Amino acid sequence: MDAIGRNGDHGWGPEIACLVFFFWLASGTSYQVVARAFDMPRTSVHRAIHTTSGKVASLFAQTIHHPSEEELVVVGAGFARLAGSAAFGRVAGSIDGCHIRVKPPARDADCYLNRKLFYSIQLQAVVDHTAKFIDVCVGYTGSVHDSRVLKNIPLYLENKHPPPGYFLIGDGGYPCLSYPITLMTPYRQPLRNQLQAAYNSRLTKARVVVERAFRILKTRWRAIFLKALEVDILYVPEVIICCTILQTFVSAKGMCWTMRMVSMTTKILGERMHLQALSREQKRQVSWPVLCTTGPRLHLI
Image 1 (cartoon, rainbow, N blue to C red):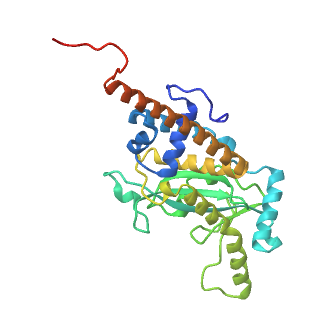
Image 2 (cartoon, rainbow, N blue to C red):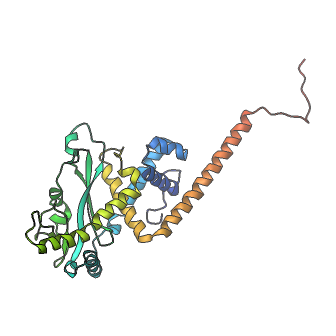
Image 3 (cartoon, helix red, strand yellow):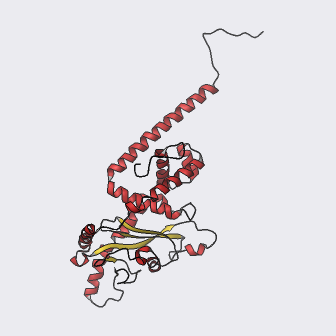
């Protein structure tokens, strides 16, 4: 809450707005269902979700960033342990992409159809040895190849990462590069010797950490990722960015932050249920006839 800010432009309060947003992310339901769950107008739910997602997305630069020189030493050592070889001690990250199911616009729907024959928007990310996101790009349509996405993102165009002396690792969907960034990929089949086979095996052991990051992301927000996002196609990238930011934040803060969120959720929802119960009791008292057994009786003649 301190990171997002406590000032709101509506009467529900920032805590309620955050809970509405998290509930929507966790459940993947429509705004109408969320409105019934929180006893709020649908327009207020829409405003709360979009306002909160904008605030969360604004934390991108301070949450998802490339490691410093000191951190790179730790990252390289971590990848060396994953690969089981000191030759991977200069790995600065593992890169891969995944497809996010969407409902495409009627116009240009074919652009969103990927090779797995469903409509999607691509999330391309780089993670460190702990599966923490250190670079994220969202927005390319599902029909675009991984290598083309790579060559059109700031990571590649501006040579932002990795620094000289370090390299990224990726799967066979990417080209092996030395400029403008250094990217190592597996040898293609058929392999010529045992040395190439050993290299591929070590690289795969280190590279799969990015797939683990995607699995964690899709498991934590399964309602969002396991079905087509029912939002405007232009809003999808912001939702995905929010999910990656929240995953990075939760990984850094651990269970303490999660338990505080659960405690706050229980407290606020409990208060709202109490108020709803009082409201129902007041309505019942108003609607029921008033029976007076001790006062004077009025006789109509």
